Image (cartoon, rainbow, N blue to C red; front, side, top):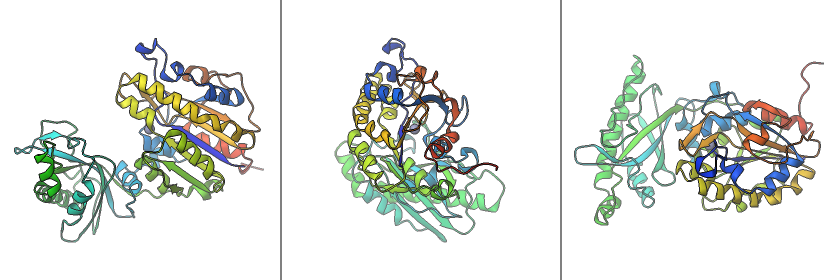
Length: 402
Ligand SMILES: [Zn+2]
């Protein structure tokens, strides 16, 4: 018996005016998800706690059964692990943006003209930077995104970030956030690193070419999300299940890697139905497979209700292949957090969940939506309850007491 956990990133929403006060999930035609809801049990989930706006990283940690408050050590290490950089104890990691500064040093574009080519060459130049006693590992991710890992004696993650999160101002100087020698030294190291980045990136052939072609150069790095490597119990040992993860998003891949799931290759260009098929195939090898589909969250950040609705319909078409799976296996479908079209960001509203499988105690829910699921038999649960419920349905749980 296998289990597939389908996380539709940011799919849940609030009622949207342009959709006649329906959510995109309510507005979309979703006959397959509705059939799964009807065949299963529904409810709503506070992935962290009621009213707390989850990040995708903390939400995925909670859904995988980890206490997000104690296990979260900053976004940087998850991002770095997601792009394939090892982060070990004592090292600090950041997520970075390639960005553009003008001759006065003011940030004119936090995403360097949404750079998509040449970032690997730029990364090579950054990796060539030498700082005494410090080992630098830097890797470009998708688009303007990248990750940085620093190792060396006496580094602290208790430092501020350089990303000002706005344009028209200078990047922040990194400051120590406590009085320790380590924090002061780390801030010093980072400020020197950023200065060196400016130097090696400014005259880099990739940027010379970008300027010639009228594009913005990636002439600096903005650092944020500092953190140290978390030490997390292995998912497989925790639940006695072999586990794999399919996700196109580096952050989710990173979370999965730290939890000990096998991160399976997923092409960033793969279609939603291709990803679902990949996940179903992976269940022949693993007891448990997590599949993250990012597209609905992306449409939300663009504030595009119609696109989000269309993405949900695409997910629904891909879900046609899942009904058969639930005759002998368990499937859970949920969103990791609500993403609001009007706010263009995550919100703390609970998300709908459905669980279908051979011995699920079904309820009367026949539609998969935020409001319909709220009337379901699972009621209102926390993200950290989900794995316990699934493992118990699979008859793999341990008895508490005699
Ligand atoms: Zn998310």
